[in-house]
Every structure is written in C-alpha cells, then in structure tokens.
Length: 408
Image (cartoon, rainbow, N blue to C red; front, top):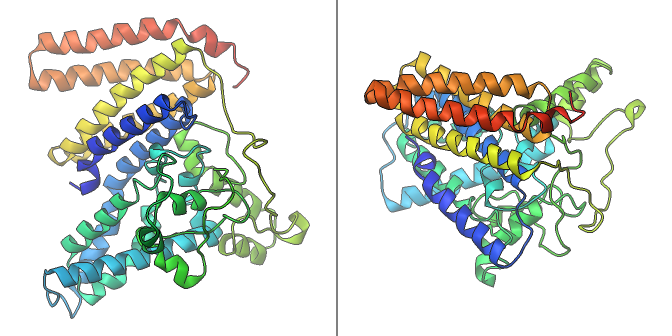
C-alpha cells in the first residue's frame, strides 16, 4: 500500500484544522460544493490508480530488471538525496509540459479547475494523469534506482505538495522561499491572472523554476481556476470534458492543424477558428465563480452520503489487497458511480433521482453482503436496513427540489 493511502487520515486532520481556522477568522476560503467535488476527484484518482499502477510501476520494474546497472546503486543517504533531486527535476519537466502541451494538459487540467484554494484542492487529482507522468521517470529505472526506493521517494515528493495548497500560510522565511516551493509560490501556479499562467511548476524545489525561467513571485491577488471553466460538479465529466472538446474541434480542421491542436499550447487554434486564446486580465472583485444553490436539507443529505462514501472508500483502499479482481472492479465501479451521483445532486440533474435510488439499493445490498461475511446476519440486516430506510426517506424529501431545476 502506498504512503499516500496511509496519509489519508493526516490529510483530513489538516483539512479539518484549516477549515476551523478559516471559520474562526471568518475567511471565505471554502465552499461546500467545491470542496466535496475536490475530494471526489481525489477519491476517483485513488481508484483509477489501483489499475494504472500495473502500467506505471510494472513497466518501471520491467526496465529495471533488464538494466545493466540493476543492483549497483546502494541504499544510503547520498543515493536517496540524489534520487529525490532526480525525481523532483523530472516532475518539474512533466508538470511544465503538462501545461505547455494541449493533449497533456487534458491529463492535468482537473487539478486547476477549482476556483477556491485550500487543502482540498491538493487532493483534486486527475484520474489519468499517472498514465502520462510515469514515462518521465523511466530513465531512473535504466540508471538502476531500485523500484522500492523510487516509489518511496516519489511518494514523499508528492506528499510535500499537499501543504502548499493553502491561503492560511502567507510567506515562509526568505531562505526557504528561495529554495523550496511554498504556498505563496503555488498560489501563483493556480492563478488565472495572465502574469501567473504557466509559472512555478516545482514540486518541492522552486530552484528549477528559477533555473529555467518559469518563476513568478506572488504580487497581485491571485484569481484561481482555469480560463474556460467546465461549470460542473460532476467528477467524471470534469476529468474528460477538456479532451472531449479538443477532439470535437480537431474534427473540424485539417489533419495538420489537428496535430498542432494536440501538440501546441492549450488554447491554440488555427486562424479560421480564432487563433490562439488571449488571456484576459481578471480581478477578484469581478471574477464570476461557478456556483449552484442548494437547500440545507440537500447539502446535509449530500454530506451524509459523502461521509459514507469516504468511510467505504478508505476501508476499500486499506483492504484492497485482500480482494480478488472481480471484487475490486465491482467496488471501484460503485465508488465512481457514487461520486458522479453526488456531483449530479449538486447540479440537481433530473436523471439523478432514478440514479440515486438505484445507488442506494445497490449499496444497501453490498453492505448487507459485506457485513454478513464478517458478522452475523442480524448485524447485516440492521446495518444495511438502517442505511436503506434513512437514505430513502431522506431522499424523498428532496426530490421535489431536484425536479424543480431546469437541468435535464
């Protein structure tokens, strides 16, 4: 199991602390629908990661096994430091190219869609980014860095990036700001202000940005998000919306221009389609964030279902190694189905009424089977039955609100 999964309780503890601080200071850093969508995207990325690791780690191991330098690099402090520097350097280049190449941007854009900036944004990860980023690390396998060492260092490099997704921390000491990526640097990276776009790609060491000309200090107030917001809380849609639009546009142009649309910067189009997208100046005062309205009853229902989802997903991730592939696939489909319906509930899509009732029935049946396999049938009936009745009765009280919406 990865260090990322083991760190989940710490992530939520720190999110809780940040949320408490913002509430005490009356800072508008959190929106419920935005934060839940961020976390839902994170849940989905962990699920897809189960299946992609056979590609990512599997190929790394295969190359390492055939490397002439296999076993030549010892485990010591020096080699760990060298590997950390190498991982961070290669991450910088993947991250930078993921902003500068349109097709790669589709694998990363999800992380930038939130128009808020808090610790939940750190967990808003694209579901298929790992299918592209792993290629950049393969030279390390050829050099002879042990797969176990690589996975550990790569996980630590990823964990570092969690805490820099916050507005609660202003600036770090000057020497630290010069060497390491900080919240100030990364706020710039998430900015849609023209001067901030495609800056500060560093994971841990900001020195890469200073060396390669992509550093930008935080000056004017940051406006967060992307230039073309997908305007949806549905994690499934926001993960693929960019590519869907890209491929639609590619069918309308000459083949050579279609290739350029994939390989050049995001927003590039041939002259007949308007040319390169121009970045417009934005202001925190006038910038319109995507939002939807929901009653406290609907939000409370969503929160309840999300807590059940979070507990179930955590149990699944911690126990997945004990499941066979059909069980893993079934649980994964149910989890992805759930995050999609939660997003649809925020948007009050009319189709979600049937989808949510079906989901409640399926989850209740799954809960009965799981509880019965560990405890008695009495506990299985009690646990699944309470969830079934509570969810259905509660959901019936909000169906009218959902149906009153104009969204299909």
